[in-house]
Amino acid sequence: MNQYIPREIENIIIQNSRTFPAIALTGPRQSGKTTLLKHLFQDTHQFVTFDDPLNRERALTDPKLFLESYGSKVIFDEIQYVPELLSYIKIAIDQDRRQKGRFLLTGSQQFHLIKDLSDSLAGRIALLNLLPFEIKEKKRSPFVKDLLIDTKSCFMHACLTGSFPEPVLQPEINMESWYGSYLQTYLERDVRNLANVGDLRNFQQFVRLLAARCAQVLNMTNLSNDLGVSVNTIKRWISILEASQIIFLLPPYYRNLGKRIVKSPKVYFLDVGLVCYLTGVQTESHLLNGPIAGPLFESFVIQEVVKFYYNKGKRPNIFYLRTHNQLEIDLIIEKHLEIHPIEIKLSKTLSTGMAKPIERFIKLFSSLKINAGTIVSLSDEEIPITRNVASSTLESLLEKL
Image (cartoon, rainbow, N blue to C red; front, side, top):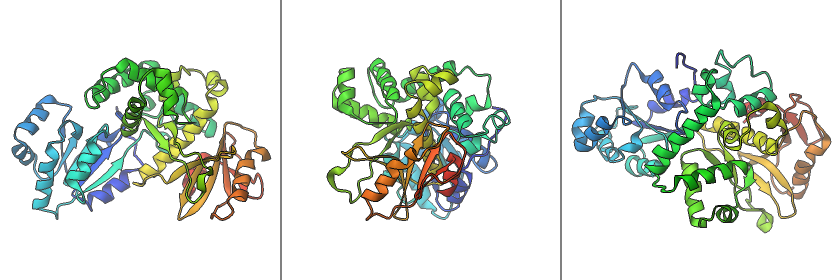
């Protein structure tokens, strides 16, 4: 890659490197973790990748000598391959707790990594997540900035090009080939080797089936029946996809709302480009008029909201709501105990009908502290829709979070 695009999470990483002895930056493969850390710390830290089998062998054979040989500050790339090293990193940190930002770790998946890090380095490490480019970051690329002129163009680009740095920065890449290779690498290196899934064909079929159901309430029994595997297998596969940050499970909001609420999560992919690859969406017409057009736009909005929180070093405090009498709010953002209801509509034309779910929500749950609602759509008009609801662009919404 011949250029570096500044990332929104940079300041959070730098701040944490002055506070914690270690930082772990996790996220899906190819999201830019290694490039980011090498860019920020190239003058202060040595770099070691455990993608290299020789480095893995040396770290496992004599971990103390291995750590000593890299001096006081080092980036360890793909630490999940040598979790045994973490206890020795802890010892090194405890010998001198005054040194900050000493060990910078990356991991492409989190099946056991977060537990290992939390157990071994509790109180010594900052855990951060890096997802593919958010809209602001894409606009820093000379190849893309003139294409992203409104919400519709941002949505289409996210679907037909994706948000991973490599295809965004190299427009000549064939997307079908890139995602095919990406999925194969993920299946072979992470799912088979690290998550111990034997039948990759079944797992790949599961991922495709789940992509076709993005933005739906997760029904493990239906998936189990469709694939002919046990519900426990589906649960395990879901946790693998969630741990490797391929999917995001949006929890239901049912705080103090009683038993009227659907309590299963909704499932979203964190890169809608991958959903389009898995479901065969390749053209603008198919994207905007196909059977999963609405769910794709909903997934796009959710992925950008999740990225926003991760890039601030925060956990997303977001939910959805569905009652048994069919009231549904696509997205609820809770901030300082205030509720911000948001409806997501794949439409260029605004209407008062879009505000009805939020108006009904405000009326039904008047005991809650509910702020004015927001409609996010393909329209770039920021105008009142009703007394309690206004339209907003996605970028404006993110700026207010």
